Structures are given as structure tokens and as C-alpha cells.
Image (cartoon, rainbow, N blue to C red; front, top):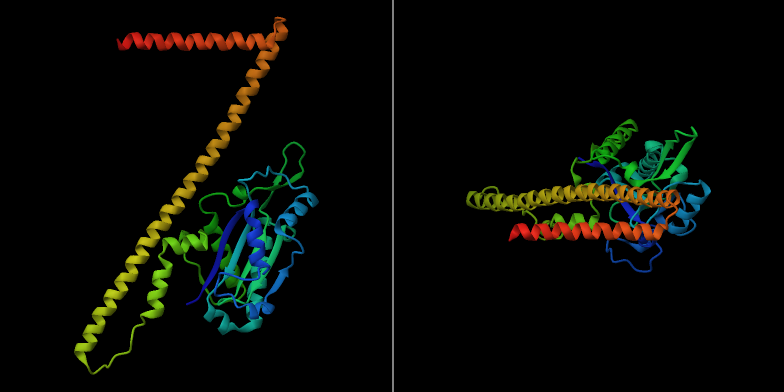
Length: 328
């Protein structure tokens, strides 16, 4: 049975040039051997981009007055890769394939009220082994400003994909859309592997080794009237199957660990941001206190700071002296 596949990637500003050149086929040569440049003319778009992704992002931000602090470490764009398997597309044919991808494009444009205007590019690649759609968009969330009562449009990847179940929700919603549009597909597997980059996925699943075994060690047809050979082949099949199962078991454990570490890292980053905000508030409060005290007592603020600093240094030195006396 074929599956409805939708997978997300988040990108920082420094990664956009590479994604742009790959998706829009701007490279002369490709390391991906699955790309057949002779078939690139069969690729098509549901939304074209006439400039680089970086410039398109800046233009969009300025045009729609999008809020949000953009830093070097900020995820500024997302990419949804939508596909199934080769057999599915060969079965449904060219027109239904296009309808499948058009359905996916409309789904993304309306998902969480994103808005089609925030989609930068939507490109279908027909020049690889399996057709697939790349949708690159700016993760804009729409919030109501309590003070003004007006809607604020904000670039916030962490809020767009908020919560541990955010990708599960995406798959559930996409599968529902697929069914409603009459495509006979199963829901994508509910494992975290879909949300790793393809390179990471291949690393943790021992992909290349398994692929080699599947391609170079096929199960051979045997003579059914030769019982000893049947028994021997059956043993080899069991050994081979268990070997693949062992690979997959290790892979899923590795995937779960990677996903857990990613989640913990996000939490630590959020905690770090909170601590920085609290630290800034405290520094501002202390600075304001010095300002008011210096005005109130007509005392130099710099001199006051030196007195306070000297006091705490002496206090700290006295505390250390007491500790040393205790140790004696």
C-alpha cells in the first residue's frame, strides 16, 4: 500500500541559498544521481519565485510589515516536501498526479491560516525517481494585539510548529485532506523519522547498507520439488529478514534519541531566552535605581556605583575569610 507523505524542514537565513539553487534547478551539476537533467523541463510550479529566497523573504517582510526579531540562529523559512511512492504516481497517471500536488498546495496555503501570500515557491520535481513537491514558505502566525485590537502578522517558526504533537497534527490533517479528495493512500507512518533531514535520516537508519543489500542480494527463486534446498533457502531468508529487522530496530531507537535531544535543546534555548530577558530587566532596574538615588541625594552616579561595587567586594572577601577560618 502507498502512503501519503509530508515532511517538514526548517531553514535559517544562511541555508536559503543552497535550498534555492536545488529547488529552482540553478545548479549546473548535482551530486544527487537520481536527478535526470533531461527531464527537468517536465518540472512545473504552482507558485514561481523570480528572485533568490533571501530577497523574496526580505520583500515579503517589508510588503506585509511582518513582525518578529530575525537573528542569525532564527528559522526564517520552512519547506514541506510532499510525495508518495513511484508506483502510486505511475498508477494514477500524469493528470491525477498534478491534481494530487495541486491539492497539497491548497492544503498548505490554508493550513493554520498561513495564507498563499506567505508561500515563496511551490515546485514539482518530475526529474527524479519519484515525483515530489517542494513548498517553501515563511512561517507567519496571525495574532490579535490586545492593546490595539488589530491583527499582528509575525514571523515565528517556533509558534507555527508549537508543541510536541505539531507534526502529528500536520500528518493527520494532510491525510484527512487526501481522503476527502479521493486518493487511495494510507496515512504516513507515525514515527519521528519524517522530521529529520534526509541526510540525518540516512545516517541513523544505516540507509546505504540496507539499500545495497536489497539491490544486490535479491531473494532468488528456488525449485519447489527440492525439499533440502527449500529448507536451506528458508533459513537464509529468516537470517536475512532478522538482519534487516535488527537494522531497523536500531534505527528507530536512534531516531527517538535524536528527536528527544532536539526537543530538549529547544527547551534549553527557550529557558536561555527567558533568563536573558530577566537579566536585562534586572540590569535595567539596577541602572534606574542608581539614576534615581544619584538624583535624590545629589550624588555622582559613577561614584555611587564604585561605592556599591567596593562594598560587595569587601563583603565577598569577608565571607571567603570566614570560610577559610572554618576549614582550619
